[in-house]
Length: 186
Image (cartoon, rainbow, N blue to C red; front, side, top):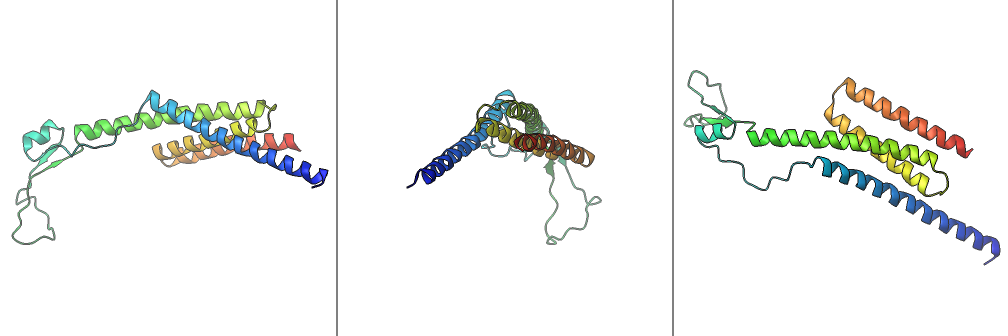
């Protein structure tokens, strides 16, 4: 192996290791942000208990539901057998379902805030830190992924115009960061 090919192989190896380090740093940054968001406002736990017993009017009302009875005058035509009579039932959402929905929404909002602020800090840090070749790209990638996750949270929480405005703002921020980075490299 000649000296020139040995130098190219060494440079290629260093670049590969640096790139992998940057990716690992970005992924770790995103995991840290997710851990922070979960510690601030945890998402609702997985449902392992069976659905509450709401077979009677009293049990239904205790759980926060509404007891619905169908009389002959209220019946709508339904494709069922002739001998089956409509039965009363409990209509939700139950109190536990409403609490779970509120906790899920709070967790999503906290996660959005943490990812947006963390992504901004990572992108700014990546633009300012130019001493290590793999650290700055890792921070930039972590910030970009964080912005993407924050955008997904906003996308699921808002509708219509909110989605459009959010997408445009995130696009402009990332475009500005990209132009700054590539302008400096030229």
